[in-house]
Length: 122
Image (cartoon, rainbow, N blue to C red; front, side, top):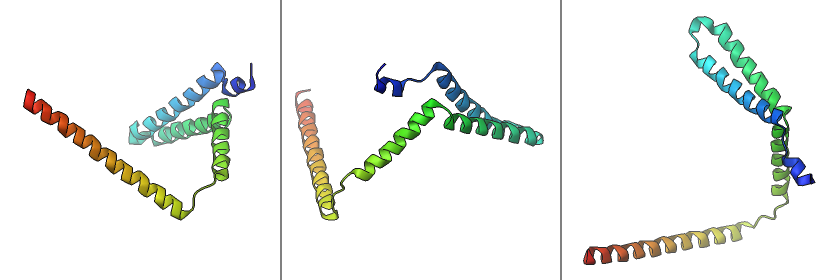
C-alpha cells in the first residue's frame, strides 16, 4: 500500500465509531428537547453523555485526526499564498463583474431572439 493510500485508509471500526458518535449526539439532542420536564436529570445526563462521546470520537478517531490534519495543512497553505495588492484585487474584481454583466446580457439577447423565432413560427 502506498503512502497516499495509507492516509485515506480508515478501518471499519473507525467508521462505525464515528457514525455511532454522531448518532448518539443527535439522540442526545432529541432527548434534550423531547423528554418531559419532570425527567430533566435524565435529559441532562443523556445529552452530556452523548456530547462527551462525540468529543471523544472526534479527538481519538483516525477519520477526525485526518480531517484536523487536513485543516491544519490547508491553513498553512493559505499562509503561503501570495495575495494581490488592493489595486490589483479591485481591478480584477471589476473585470469579473464587467464580464459577468456582458455574458448575462448576451445570454438574455440569445434567449429573446430564440423566443421571438418561436413566437413567429409557432
